[in-house]
Length: 583
Image 1 (cartoon, rainbow, N blue to C red):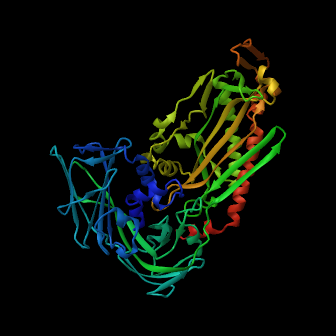
Image 2: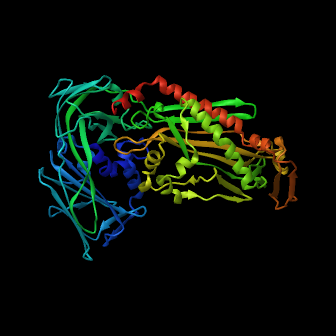
């Protein structure tokens, strides 16, 4: 019951190895938010108003002999039993709640775990389960959960019913027995893996139901985990599982809750001995540096493995949800000069200030870049249609997260300017993360893109004797982007590719830009040099501005990097193979 586990069972492992692992089953949207919250964002409440309730019910729990993580986290594990988990979170923001009162299932108290989670494992039963919540102030709520009517049973793997041995570099043929399962229902495949001594069932693929299925070897190369930094992992005493999940409406809802939806799950599987480990696809990287006329330019792109990233051929229509330009145009540089006796002799502080430009100037930059960037995206993704900005900004999904955008500003020390009537989105809370899927549904897009050009002022000193001279300022450009696609059956975010392009800054003097530098130095003997203010006179033309931010080089590297990552993807057939299973 991987999807169910994914949402409720992985707190400890998330804390232990969250920083080392990729975005696996153990790092779902819920887990990431929960792990960040431990232990400060949980509060006790005696009120059921303003609470969001998330509920799951699983049936036919895997064997207690497996020794998986959830068996240690949640007490009373029962082979073949039922499991009810309830989470209470803040409906209007972040944070979790512990109930000042009682939470019971069929009259038995659910165990409180942490960060709003209550859990109870029960003996298997075909009967519905009644959940009741009562606070010390007298507020109550109740509802009834029905066990899954859809059931599956694994008969054999590669024709083996017992003492199963699998070579995971090859396809695996599965014989299933299904009850009440509609044709082409998505099943989730999982495999038990040991990571730093902790066993958990990791998601491997989604596949359409049937009495006889073939799991391609590519599935086992692209599971929802990535061993990082030499992290120890193994397939000792593994378990191949199959889950069927659905969202259902609870019945007999009373009290504080007007309606309750819950995840209904049924799972089955077989213990397996892994005779040969798969060679994991840890994702594709395009990385390089080019020596161009105005200095080096670097790029680094990443495409996750096929479990977490769709084939780029799925992009037919793409829109931008966040695009803008921002910069820090004042820079303090401290230069320390030491003598042969290693004692400090002089400290010089230089402030380099680029002249403040109007919102219209910066707006013109992004207005000009937008069609150029989208033209490159269309070219590299096989003429994908670029949607107008309004097709994105007018959706309800976009409007639901506008509040998390950064306001434009313009000061002598910095600025931020979004593209036209769009916004530069800041970090969106985890409980709002379904907005991408909503935007794509409402706009007709297959993918949405965030893009940002950052400019940072800096000073450049190359010689010790220059310490008494005003520096010529530079602006260092950095272009970052991310392309996200439609989620899988479980609602997980799918990322096509993300990356960064940056390079050496251009000296302002080389393009005649107006730059003010201010030097103030204090010697070891407390003497001060004269304060010098030097103004390099010049006119900021559009051409000079393009040169300053190295627009031509950024776009050239952007196109080259996309082409390189696309070439690597075409050479790796796993993406198409894995995603064809969902058709």
